[in-house]
Length: 180
Image: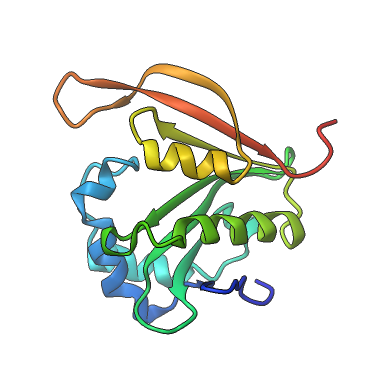
């Protein structure tokens, strides 16, 4: 990766082996499972393997996870992901998790702005997309404020926390280059 994307309050950096315990806590938090496709705990061994291969090229592994850190120092406050990269169409999905104790401090908005700039200027992607549960108002506002356009709603798309419950999902898209 080129120089780490950095803004006035946060910087995005590559994963390090020292991130094991941070990732272990994050990936095994059932609250995070509700906004991801995770259904089971992740072992430290699996995360060590993941960290060992996380330095691979974005174009090769078709995903990128960056750690969100305050510029003022202190522990990581979250992660942001590009996933499902499609080389032919130059698009990728976006996922962002800011730890509960660090929310409502502007980290998500700044992180997303840095990621968009990195996707446009360094990775040369054509577009980004994301899927947000219709009830997740904070994420809906975040992506709308970042310029993502709501392009549709998928009915009963996400499994809810209650057995038999299905939630609507809102689809967002951000075209980074000419719309063609």
